[in-house]
Picture 1 (cartoon, rainbow, N blue to C red):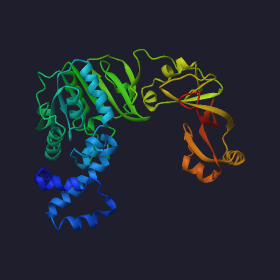
Picture 2: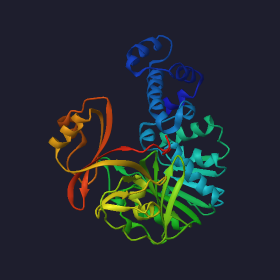
Picture 3: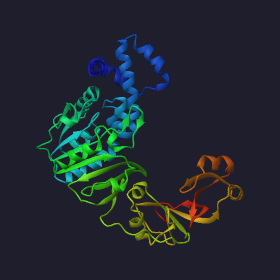
Picture 4: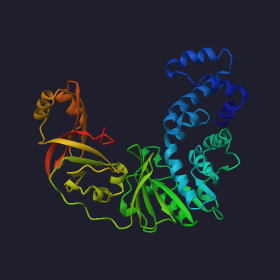
Length: 394
């Protein structure tokens, strides 16, 4: 596999990759037949595979980087999104980190972000093909002077002399994603021991990690990008016991070392706030609700209600017009009366799936609405409203 990859780095491979930049996957058979008249069949196959991976990688890395970088199938799937990697690298830079060991570095996505922040990186992975891609990526992006790639078992790497480590254990086994931290590769217990051996560290974990599993000397950070929770990380050497939610791309960060009590439950007011997923995962709904003078609609549901509209980066605001007992027949009649054809269905605390709602109410008409299927003070309910524009004056 590495021999085929190495051929892509040669003149013929580069010509092929340049030609395939705008390649349409639907025309792959025709493209392969045409290119094999000029190039070796094995090289054409490798180039077509790399072209597919680059197209998939655009969503994570952006066009400018994705079409210069090299990927493996696992590398595209498991690499950190560029915005998240950049955020983490900036945190390390702000801590004064100059030399860092990136353990389980894969194809080098995190190493690239760290190097761009001016940090010298030792990127370690045991997969020879991933290491070959990481070296090629460092060279292609002009960062070879800051990134050393080592193909080795991370558990055998001496990190003495490094300011920090970043560990991203594999959370997939041959049977799929694992939720057992000791089934990570390497196990989470090893990653935490490696983190404690240097001044600063970050260990990437599943976003669903239980809060009680966070070591007391660690800071736990959940990161979302445009509303989607992308990762959680345990930071060492920063703020022991702190919990943080960071929202990208804006960078708003909500943190606490002493969690507030849950807000009181109150009747649904004029506005409903849907907290960002990172805020919910970090158990910071109370901290997000406090500046809004908001309460919960139900003690078990992370929707915040308030009578006034106040700006916040930590939640999306909706103006609520109707609060009704749950019932799809009633909902269908109401939507038909108001000629709602564009229906956004959100659920929290309801067993009904949005697709089932759309199928049964069959929205038609020129208007739009959002319906929340949830519980209000324990009762199954429907809240109907509309998103509030980012600028309340528009």
